[in-house]
Amino acid sequence: MRINASHPWCQPLPFKAGGHPRTWVGGLWCCLFVVAMTPACFGQLRSSDKWAAEFYNHYRSIPDVTYKIIGNKELKLDVYQRVDLTQPVPTLFYVHGGGWEHGSKSVELGSILPWLAMGWAVVTVDYRLSGEAKAPAAVEDCRSALNWVAQNAQKYGFDLERLVISGSSSGGELALVAGMVPGGAGLDNNRPDVSLPTPAAFVNLSGVTNVNDLIDGPNRLAFAVAWIPSGPQQNEIARKVSPLTYISANLPPILSIHGDADQIVPYQQAVRFHEALTKAGVPNQLFTVKGGKHGGYSQDQYVRIYEVIHAFLATHHLSFPGSL
Image: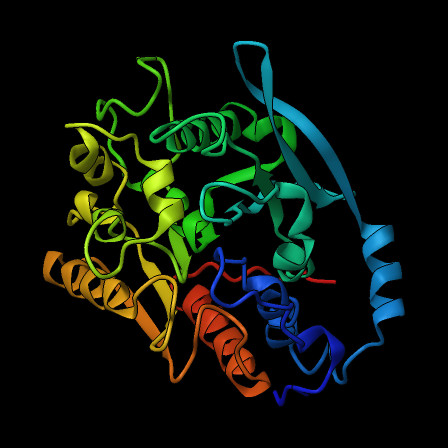
């Protein structure tokens, strides 16, 4: 199927170069559903108003569900799902980016619309930012949210056999670590009763895979330093929250998408992660966006990215025919 890259939904969101990593997938994901549609059900691009009406009629949001209480603070997530569920459906667990210091589950609807259009349920999660809690708090929160997903799968119709975990930039790091870390690693608030689902796959979008690389040396970033507590344990904590630490042969398939001119998260992190996964025998793919920075890709690049993601889902039997 030919995708019209000039469609408004294919346009990238604004990107703030030289600052904190903005979540770049708002524009990217907004066109993924176009790739997922077959010619029979999507012979030509629909107008945004028609699709919005269909979305309104077929989907509901359940906002601000409390999944964890820390002190007096309630941590919340949002659930998006079809209104006509008759069976469990594939589910996306999505973690927003923002350099561990800003961002919100509520501002990335554009990141999840294509998954909804494919018939998936989606869970988006807030977590403690670095201004209120240092690492590994955000990882612990994301793992608590995954535990909530497991405990509430029947109630909300989550198919835990088809659970994909995704995030962008710092959210990519949190998504990967949340799903990769084995029990007993000390990242579950010392709760032995935590039960996490095993993801079917990861989609890593310009994610940080080596936090140590960002707190010292030529790739040092102030917001990464701000997230990792200072002191003699700094490097150990950074290692503990780095996806590179947890590579093992039993991991599910992982797709990484990264620009080779990324000025925030070094492209070599993605290369090293890909090489380590391959060496361990983990099914994985690195799609390199040629000349791509930390977002702000061209229309053609976005379209190609959508095709790669959809093919990845199909290859690993995660496509779902329940699209709008």
